[in-house]
Image (cartoon, rainbow, N blue to C red; front, side, top):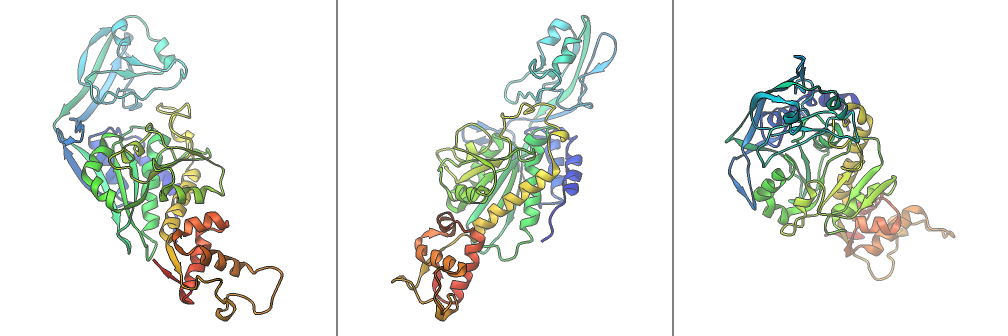
Length: 425
């Protein structure tokens, strides 16, 4: 199977990094266009004003320029230098203000004096700029010319979706978001892992499960997607994951689904058992898992991350940049997600056709005809599989009980199917 290289991941990162994204707008569509080179995203546009449960799709936002000219005549806080400088969804404003008034519209982080914060105002009209605390302290008294050439208008919210049909209609959902401007771990790591994961999974022949991939704006996009696909997912979804904060070099973190021990949880924990991973329980705080796991849906959606959102100081700042992530780590994250999906794909239940004691394995070539004090490993695996092939335990259950991997037990299951010791449910 052809795997993506860290260099190829970096190439796409560099193309996506400068784009000013938000919950709506051309930056999102441009990002989806680039990612569509890897994953064939079908685009859905949900019009402004559409009701999605308790929410309403907001106006679309566009901005062509935004900057401030200081009393010395120097242009500062220019989105062409860093698109985090503008408060996301700022309304248009042009005028001259004094330092005291300007400060009312500035956002900085005294505890991270070199960082530009990421600030949004999606649902309340205001304008503002984000500035490092160090630069803020250097601002002098005088008049400042403010230019924000933006507009809010009736447009649409963009969702991208791709689907890989398998032998079964049971589905796995992989979800990430494409609404943050230039941040590396908290934004681009998710869409990149999702897109390259699709590309790798598409190479797998005879996939048992079907796989649905979706890119959307966080929160409002997931709610809109549930409005569109929620009832279908309740019927078809067997497991799913929200992909976010997956590009740094920290150990893996897995956040369980609301069900706590869903198939998504079992598969993730099985693969992570050989790694130094932190496991946390579900909470209704975080990323879009809180929408997918909301009470009306309670979908089996977990989230595999590295350092979790809010737990690294660079989170939602300009310090979450290219230097903060590792493209080798991103490749490893794709590997781990792929292993989880393959564990799900191979995971099935079987019925032992000879449940009254042990069947004779030697006449089927699965046990040596001469006795030994120890049971050969092949026979041991067969006995584990047969004993728990009761229609209740799946391969993930048997793997957790026996210490063997799903891959190993899947190979044994194929042997037992050929020798008619079991049947597949």
